[in-house]
Length: 393
Image (cartoon, rainbow, N blue to C red; front, side, top):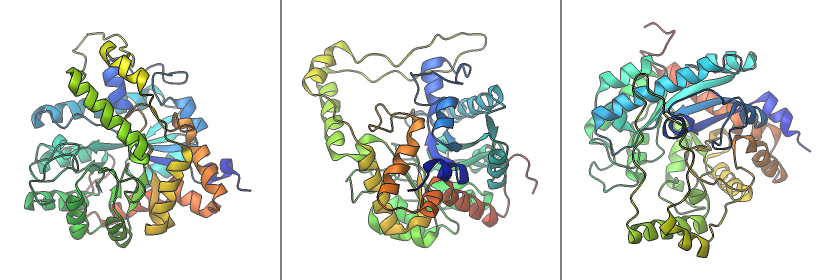
């Protein structure tokens, strides 16, 4: 019987995507205090990261992709600042990490390595100078799109306009790899996945995507792309988002969206950051609108399960091999998580499920952290002008 605690001790979880910075903006006015433990309004606090065997976290500095691009740059800078302040508030537990060596150093010191990932190319405002500036601040991946196209890359959730990547998009990919910034293909159209893999000279990632063959959702990765990813030596970091895991949950969410449209329920307003000297009270998660509650009572939300997440992880291993799979939970970026994976303390339950399916300890250690560390090192080795704090070129 595999000791899951020993797995996490030998190779702590390095998760590809956590939206806590956005949750702090939208619910806590960017206050970073009080996150040591017992914050049930979030999926994430330090005590639960420790319980989950997490040794490294890519913090997403997401901002909505329908923002005008200059505004998106400012909002993303505020998100990066939130990560810096979060780490500064808990120096005994968190450490900023800008390289694979930084991650190893943090792990050796018993701290959780904190890396930064931009979720959407709109945050670059089509500027390689902005990309380089973010790289100098320590951004280690950029997701090429979020749910809207950029002028140079097609999103999975929008009408195609670039044929995957335009010439500008290919230039962005090349510059990211020159700088040692990981190319992240979560959220992009299948045509964009293929286009990026066709030109990528260093390994790429999917920071939070699962297997389309198991659940036919546009945010998941088709098998033909996974075959290319194996040849690229990249990694697909399986996500826990219920609608991406379970067709039943996806159908329920589509029905809820349709009911919201029928009722004319407007989306939540975009939360601005506090102005200088301003205190914004905790907003909390909030209750569903009153007019939607009868429908919710009549249509209980189905739950995804740990076993279903394991099905995706197993399929990824079958197609790309154990060297090319990781974990990207998307905690604090969606609502209810699968049963057993309700918060960041849940990773050992998934590992135990996989162990029951005859995964070996070396395979589990690759999944938790060794694969993404290998990809990070490969991106650094490929870079001809690495740009992040502490590096001179």
